[in-house]
Structures are given as structure tokens and as C-alpha cells.
Image (cartoon, rainbow, N blue to C red; front, top):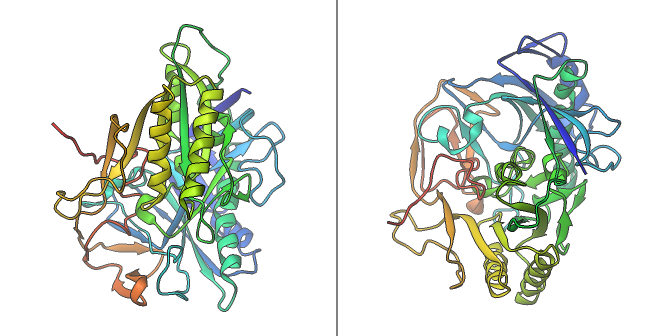
Length: 430
């Protein structure tokens, strides 16, 4: 299974009458895009705005981020989401780089607590929070989705998730008839017997409504681990649906631009033999489920002939138990593991750094902590809404989105402590 990724660099973007890319300048037909998204009867209105790097701007109610893409070989980008299912990970995919589609939406607060309550996500383009994600450095096309009242939550979830994919495909069409600036072939064909066999053990949060991940459009909750070709992840087989944990979520853009997979490919055939991905969900509700999941992951890694594994996870609570059980099981089976995770540590950084641990986890890379307090300075422009909501567990506290925002931790900051290292923050033990 070979995937040819062709890319185009976007240097500037503006709204206009057509969607076209010329000389690195992207014009976006915002009226057509707005009409396209409003075909879904769940939406009352859609706003389209562009936010650029270096702007004194803040984006609120952030839901997901996607890369504009198309397939040129008969399939459909992000297949299975608002489209038929096609086999991804092969053929040719074209992607626009340096620009991201961001969906924002303010959901009605119908429940004041619980794991799957939607929490507002915030993204600052400048200031102390700008370095938490790559999206302060990308040109961002923000689609602000306004929901019609009194519909079911699952209708809202489905419509908002699909809207991001539709917008990404719409913008991606600008590259349809152009010659690519760069191309790269992703293939596992190059193998050498004397190289260590390395696998990626890849967890996503998939619990249910507003806290899910979708595989070819199928919710992945209550599913046991499966083997994936890494190309499927890079090609959009996984679409995010986790809107309850902004700080530790994996937006769709992170899946399709997975830096771990990219680096493993760079090393493949030279220093390692990249044998594939074991894809699994975390946060089973009982220990039997956690043991069942971890056993399947370890067994799958063994069947791949894995000698070393990189382990990642998504979430902020007991999903980490599966992660640690997998590290333990792999080490006991003779598979050396390296875990990439954020730390806890409390507001002063002196509390327990990990939610749960096993003695076998002796190689850990930190991607920072979201538990430190932070003060965000006022901004001159806000996109997505006028208010920013915190504390949904007490019915919501609404703050002026344009003013100074003091947060007790980074829970609401979009991707503040992701488990993939796409941040400028880390922790070190000397």
C-alpha cells in the first residue's frame, strides 16, 4: 500500500468570488462555502473568517482543525465521513500546507457535568498560549457554526463534525488542476532483515457522544484494537469527535500530520523496520475491559514481530491505565517501549506527575503539563463568539472573550498538553 502525498504551500489567503490557488496566494469563495455548509439543516448560520499568524487575535469555541485535501485517484479525502467508504492510504492525495480549516461552535449547555460535556476550546495567535499548538503559525480559515435550537445532541455532533470535513474538501479543490510543489511517497516496502522492528501503538479517546473518534466514519467506542497501515492515518481515516477535553484532544489535523509516523517513515529502511500501527481506544469502564484491550494490543504487536514500540494515548483520566498496562505487557513480552505523554504535577509541579504508573515504564518523553495556571492578555480581535465559557460543571461561567482571561489551568486551551509532542513545552528530569 503506497501513498503519494503531493503538497502546495499557501503563503497568503483572502476571501473572494472563486476558490483558487495561484503563486502561493489562496482565494476562497466564502459565499459558496457558506452556502455549501448551510445545506445541513442543523445550522442556522455559518460565518467564514480568516485569521493569520501574528494577529492579536483569539479564536473561541474551537472544535476541530483539519487540513484542506483532495484525492486525485478516484477516492474521496476523509472517506467515510459525509461520503462513501473508500480504501485510504493509497493512491494520490493533495494537501494545502500552512493553512488550516478550524471549526468553531457554541453548544447549548444542557448538562452541568459529566465526562462528555462540551467544553469551550480557546486558541490564541499571540501571547503566552500561542506556543501550545502549531495553529498560531498557520493561516486559519475559521468556520463559525451556529446551531438551530432544540435539536438533539447527536444531531449537533454529527453536523459539526461533518462540516469540518466538507470545508476541508471544498478548499482542497483549489489544488485539483495544479502541478504539485512537493511530493513524497509513503511506503513500507523497503525492508531489511537486520533492522529492529518498530511499531506505533496508537490510542484515541472513544467513549461516546462528544468524546469520540471516528474510523472511516464509524464511531470507535466499544471497539477492540485493530491493525492499521500508517498510511491510513496520514490519509484521513481517523476524524476527531472529542469536544470535551480541549487541552488533551487529538484534532483531525494531528492525525493526518502525525509527526511520529512521519519520523518513523524517515527512519524506515535506514535505522528501523517500521512494521505498522496498532490502533485502539482507551478508557474502558472496568478493569476487565482494560485488561482485554491491553492484551489485544500486546498480542497484535507480537504478531507484527515488534521489537520496540512507541506508545501514545489521548485523554486525561483513566484512559492512561490501558496505556500503562500496555507498556507493562510489552516490556514483559520483550518489546522495548517508549511512552510519549503529558504530565500532571499540579499547579506547582510538585504533585504526582502521572495518573497511574507501572515500574516497567522506564522510558518516558514528556510533552509538558496543562495544570499550571495561566493569564491570557486582552486581544483586539475575537473570532467564533463574544463570550468564552468555563466551568460547565456549575452551569457555565461566561467571560468576555476579548478581555484578560485568568485560568487555573490549561484545560480549555486547545491542545495545551497533547500526547504527540506538537508543542513547544516539555518537562525534564536531571
